[in-house]
Length: 219
Image (tube, rainbow, N blue to C red; front, side, top):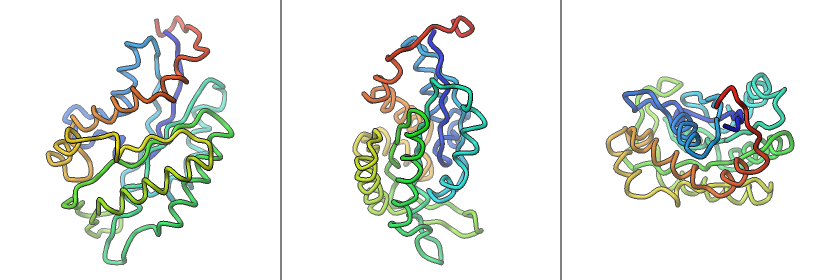
């Protein structure tokens, strides 16, 4: 198999919190890629409750510790759902701040390694997470999340970074998984739906299928 190391950088959606087996979508994606002849070494750098601003502060050091000596490596970013959550103090991250931080992150990443930007998936209007990072209830709004995704898409186009709009790519299957989760983090089938959407994404497929060399350790 051809081996590629990939850092998946983002928030709790990567962690499989609502999956009894503990598999998030990055692990599912790595497993699926073996059927295509690719051995993905997944470094899951998701932090529960992180916003885009949080990711911007930490991603480079965490990724460099894992990918610095690996020229054929890549990064997949997926963040944003926590930006538009509201607590008693209002929306956690103002939209202009989210857009600025996100564009800076992915532009810098793309100048260093192959970079892919996966937008925030939809949430349900009833999505409420108890005990947020500051000890408050966090309320998630589907309209704000979709608006953020549209802004991210425009930022990705300016940066020349491939962008997958999950608000458009995921359908009723994901909505059902959200209903069986907590309205924000889906049940296991939602993690599978995210992995399958990325597996089928042309920029991702093109990168994996280009210039891959066998690595017998993963054969």
